[in-house]
Image 1 (cartoon, rainbow, N blue to C red):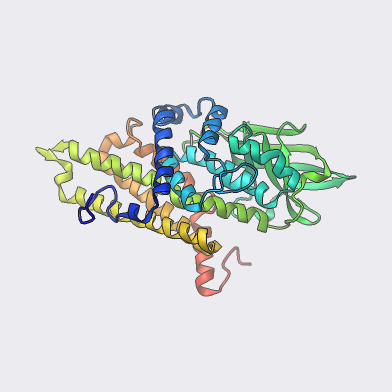
Image 2 (image 1 turned 45 degrees about the vertical axis):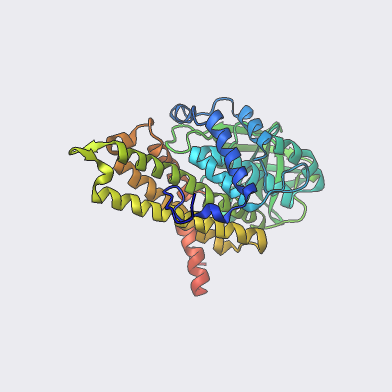
Length: 394
């Protein structure tokens, strides 16, 4: 297409900033999702479960989506931008689907890849990369979300062994995971453990009655006297540095992914506006509808440009935690606003699962607050701007 022709699907010509290999990654993920998941996702959302999630993980592994930005141990070793582009397509399908992949790759696998022992890496990473093994990440507790330093889960020494007691809440993939990365208080500070889920005393209980991320299994993890050998602990990390480094990896994927949900909702609203007639003409011909569409288009593609900029920096010099908060805070907030505006354009049809908008809107209500609430990311930026710590008065 000539450069001077305006493309509603790419108004800023962002594809010109991508390599042919990056575009091929995006298209391969989009094609797989269109065949394997898109025809079923509304049904899965309504039912509150994914059909055969273990088989789905093997599909993800075959495409190279699991830990795709990690190297070694048979992992793809692709770029952060490649991973980001994949997250857009995954979340354009459904936030719960993207969450399944990002919890596996950016939380569980990254924790083992970054902080685990060589034995942990050899045991788990190759199988997790193919989807033969599934992981989950246990940090959040029922009473300790934004303040993980106050977690109550505790690991104590008993001879050469460790014994863990506690509970973790809102854990994606938890009901069918093979390994759980568990963070716990110890006499030596917060430490991480690779916990096989078939260990006696470990239970995963499905959390039901949720109205968001319904296509993603969410669990409460209960650890009652879980006995582990001495080498189950991550050897070289103590304190919150370990889990927070993993959260920043996952937040990076969210910066991209939420724009996929926004894109899907925007495209649905744009198409609907051109076919839905009122007062003898398509509603896309009315000024108020055009104003909504223009604003949605602006925020969608500004968000994608921000994600691409942060991805290029991550691949070249790395990202600061403040830059990750910048992207997560802006893009999720704007994506949710896009979905809400798209819902108004669809009118009553906007609440029907015949269209993707209400599903994306409901899902993003979770994405807005998980892996750092709006308030926490705002305070991260506030502290960076002023030098004043406003977290909890400490």
